[in-house]
Length: 103
Image (cartoon, rainbow, N blue to C red; front, top):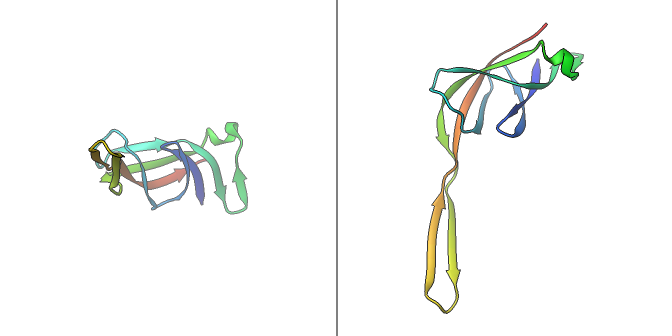
């Protein structure tokens, strides 16, 4: 069984036991949360209607906070002596899917 969920502005395909990296979420490691399901596939049975999806629930547990790769930014203007160097690391949260329950 797997589901398509909305997490951090993106859609992710998840199954029980998967570990995902999503945009930063509030909460401590060990906290549980519920993700909205957009589609659920259980063998030959595919559920995509909003009324039917109301009975399904995808639960996850926060594993911890991680950071993305370093992005280097360089501003430079010719003939003026202007140089500016900046960097950025996007914060993410790792979550582990603990269950997909439904009807």
